[in-house]
Image (tube, rainbow, N blue to C red; front, side):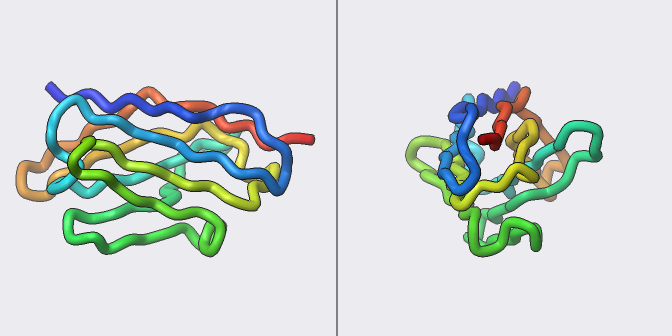
Length: 117
């Protein structure tokens, strides 16, 4: 059993910053591909950022230069630093862990980020 728990969501003003955290119930951050997804109101879920076990990162074009994904293997935690937030960033942000070797995928329940003045 694997559980992912997100935290750090909330209400922020445009231009503000927020850091999301995703804590895993057991060691997997170091060898799974970890990703952050979001689902804006009335829209489909989309990939925001991902980091592989080898450290390679990938970002959606809409967040490049503003968001940064990182991980702390010792703490089994992945982070999403969000800067220069825009109203369009408002969404439920969910943490994802994926293993190609074992063909399994896990999801957190999500945390709400609201960007509004």
